[in-house]
Length: 245
Length: 245
DNA sequence: CGTCGTATTGAATGGGTTCAAGTAGCGTGG
DNA sequence: CCACGCTACTTGAACCCATTCAATACGACG
Picture 1 (cartoon, each protein chain N blue to C red):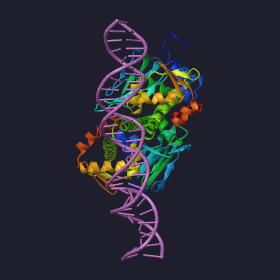
Picture 2: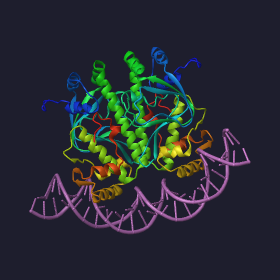
Picture 3: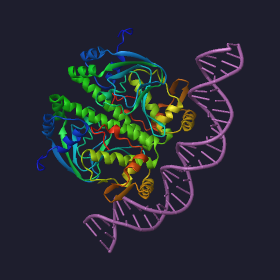
């Protein structure tokens, strides 16, 4: 746990949040090394069409995955936080079918696929943890689909905020009812499938209803129960070890 | 390839469509056995909340996965065809976070998780194929999100039809430009996040535009290029071995 | 202290929903 | 063989959530 040496502590913490690991397994996992790269605000880390030979662990900072449509519109389908491996799928899908970009400045560790493969061979249970992680990724997409298909703007927003908060909480990145809020209204709109203007009005309503408070880069949940209900949020789909929330 | 013995030929064909397999691997895969169950029209095969101890291969017939919202609305997020393993994720996610149901009558083979695990241990490349399959599942969800978030009714419908047709084609279930069409307009609406009424009007427009022809249980693509454009369909996200379409 | 990105507000417009009927097709049983 | 009933499909009209367009305010940073 030496902060000066590149060390994937966030990765260990994250995998621990979804699957129990033995001390041995944690040690092996903590022994992974890769190339550390800093990234700035709003940079593409991996692009649609790329054929990556490594995957990246977010050490700190925030990222998101997206696709652009023919008409130049952007759809965001996931946000990523410390410990996530947003492009783990590239281990088995050669060509990226979407892009990964940063929301804030931060740091990532790039681990060669070959290293991951060797690790998985040596320690099958870590392989299971990785596979499980990609399956939870898919579960989050399913819930995102429900959100877009069957809820209107208020519900969508409430759901997104609940999910984001709970995921931060699961890796110890919340402070009471306060957490970081790295999104612009434009990014929220592209995630929720609504216009920026409507994001603005929706957030105002939610503040007026006493559900949340927003400061430039932080979100305070003022009424968790109310927010949960508005978004029909049930964290079961996150498959956390602690039935969380 | 004895049709009288339960044999997962569709599974072999399906995995072959996404990853090259050696004859040995195909033999091993073809050697899998499980319990054959017939299912009727519109039956739940696996329910949200279940803790399955086996996963199922669709041998023939069609299925879909869905969730119900608090308000009782249904969101469908995938359709499944011969060879698919719609609940493969249950191998690593104990509790089902959604349900699996049949669209038509058909037949499925239920394979115990333990059998799958043993197979994966013995033949890592088949394990890779399964993992890859779940990753493609996730890729399809991502595209579904783009569809719901960033396209309007016509585009959504066109995209869904293109995807369905190409997936059938990839396992040899199309006949020229004709394929089966197992959905009701209600089911299409629940998949596309639009009302049944609007599904109806959208389909009529598409027929009028000469893109498709519909008969009770079959779909004819009259103008593939037009349909592809309307839905901005690019099959790359399906990660088929033949860059298909 | 100006500038660029982000947030906010108002008004007109539109895609899709909802409600409410009505029609067509098909399997079943009298 | 036809009546019945069920399910799926079709149509019209009023309504509404969210978009779009067009300004305006804010605020961080060089």
